[in-house]
Length: 443
Image 1 (cartoon, one colour):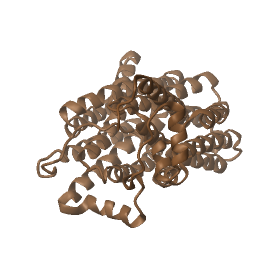
Image 2 (cartoon, one colour):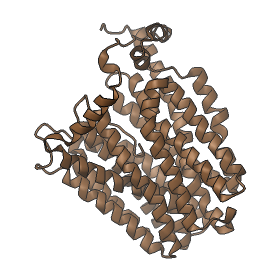
Image 3 (cartoon, helix red, strand yellow):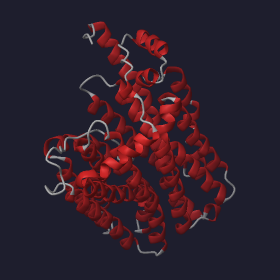
Image 4 (spheres, one colour):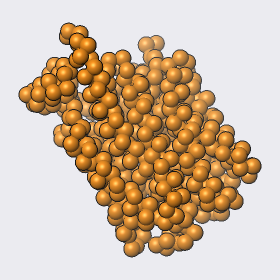
């Protein structure tokens, strides 16, 4: 392939910025919708809205993450069949409309249905957005592009905290989460280009050529390797994760991912309520949502750099250990300024620690089974994402916030042990590497 002319390179960069900008916007909305439930939950529990209590609230959180499990596992197949763009548009529309269901819900059952439907859309959006921006990233800047996209999710959590503070009403907050239907969806339909790789793989070469000409880029060659493998081949790729002694490493990664996503979703949903129960006022409790996500953005930006230099297993273990310490310290009633600092540092380690699991899996995988390895590690972790919100509800229902923080801290130690074990020479293959690959903490 010939090198692009300066004009072509400039137009290619503008195309990448267009794709990243639009995907960043919809991922921001994804983060807003994911974090809004935890942000409004303290108010819902205080007013007993729809007859909710801590136990039922935990169940509802698990319904949403179960929907995300289904959405995440099916998004790859749907995206390869219908296209990245359509999957992104439909996923955004689904979680936006689901927020409208929550806003008008007259019973807890209808509200629960709304959160489950939102989970389907939330789970389907992020993998497709990551795939699309990766395919349009300029050569040599994939890590920068995907890392930048991941900050949108934590930014959405910050917006969720401000929305809950500003509205003071859970129904209004969920109505605000319908805005993506009227902003993100039309913009994506009008301006977001389809993946050139997808078009070529589907044999739609004329569409791919026209799109490439419009933006002054070179369309990728249609090669058999770009097509998604058939069903039997997919299962062969899964079986390859257990061959030649790899089953130990695979199971260790799955266990670490289970504990990591249990932490991410459990703490994300229950932090405001647990801090409220610990004696902080409502404003401070919602402020913690904003601060922990600010920490998450910083952690995403620096975690990958350290992983590149020192290896994912080593840094991941340190990160999970720091997360466990931070979560446990939140059970101690400290001066407000100190608490904000601890929350910020906990967010810095919490969200990027899970990303390091995926980074290490991706780095140790071969080119032909990397997507399978990361996808199944994420899928197994999703069971922790389902369990975490339910567990938080049961713990809060006991009335002991100290126990809740201690249990979540233990989950951090659990993941520390298993990600650390993957770094042992007896577990790693001689050819294994630990270089970072940019992936989502909630993927």
